Amino acid sequence: MSRIKEFTLPDLGEGLTEGEILSWLVKVGDTIELNQPIVEVETAKAAVEIPAKWAGVVTRIFHEAGTTVEVGAPIVAIDTDPSAGALPEPSAESLAAVEVAPAEGAVEPGLIGGPAPGGRTAVLVGYGPRTTTAKRRPRVGTPPAQPPVSAPAPAPEPEPTPPVAPANGRGGPVLAKPPVRKLARDLGVDLTTIVGSGPQGSVTRDDVQQAAAQPAAASPAPQVFDADRERRIPVKGVRKLTAENMVASAFTAPHVTEFLTVDVTRSMKALEKIKGRREFSEVRVSPLLLVAKAVLLAVGRHPMVNSTWAGATGEIVVKEYVNLGIAAATERGLIVPNIKDAGRLTLRELAEALNTLVQVARSGKTPPADMAGGTFSITNVGVFGVDTGTPILPPGESAILAFGSVKPTPWVHKGKIKIRQVTTLGLSFDHRIIDGELGSKFLRDVGDFLTDPEATLLSWT
Image (cartoon, helix red, strand yellow):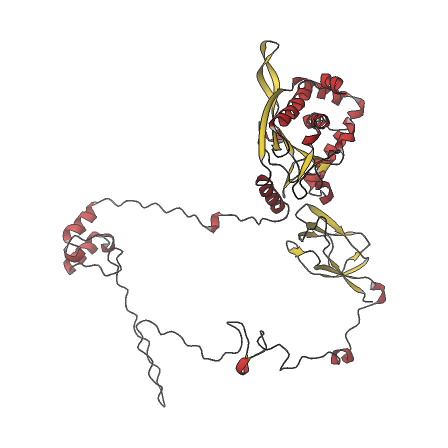
């Protein structure tokens, strides 16, 4: 068995076909251990570190960083028995045993490199043996070459013909009499810039004098719009998959979006109480925690919101678990990792899961498994100071909630106008599954919880 083993790019999940090598964590000559991370690869799902399949010494790296490699292609070679000494050189006997393809008949006739009908060799256009002598096209104005004589003398190069000034951009000479030309030289006027008013468009003395009398207009340099002022970003990896999914979702599921503006003053006060509790002292708590809790409780009251349209089987698949997706903007594009079975988590466990999800997403290390199987998603556009939006459904999901910014706003509270903490929610849903009534009830319940979370918890549980 060969000591040198080639490690191929594995399928990192869900039938991915290629990945881009972001960086090598080892180099040729390095001694590596089993399961040691050796390369970072970005797939259409995320950036992941791939561990070594064998221990040994790296003998070859097949692709540099920045290369896109197909799944199954070799990426690194490893000497799995470096203690056995240097690799043996091929012997003379082994080289002599190599069968050399015969010059004739090695390739099927008609194929590239093989004999073609009529005794010719089939070659690609522009390749193969040269059968003619290259000839240079004669220069303009050069007399045709004469047949060679016994002692040819080199013909002198003809004097180049001075270029003729174009006539006002019309491709011919400027028509003007010698006195007019002299006048133009004396006055510093360029005849090629004058449209002649004389016979056949010739330039007259009056034309030259009028041109000299006009103030020279400054010609601003034209603005340049070319590749030097453009930047091209290859569409690949996470961004490519996101684009494909969004297009597929937008033109497959009929989207409907509803909006609800909510007074969340009591939610913000409840959040402060939560932060003050001992069990939350080491956990970052944000308004997103309460929005996530509101969604989970509202899904329990309206299970159809947490479902999938299975067109192939003519069914609606209602999920009894909630894999809660949280949209995250990363340097490589938008990803939506999800918290598995989020409905079974306590409030503290949910807070920890949200923090972990965001931190891993920002590091670019979210594994593909964390982005698969989502059932309902939240996009927190409020962190960018945006009021709300009309989000597009992740593929396979029937609803997504946009959570806008929370800001002080004049609001009618108990019959009086007061400054309250207000936000706007936007719910997009698949109208094949969720009609207007169901979507409205679900959004209303999310809003009720955020308006008064403590009272809602007592009445719903």
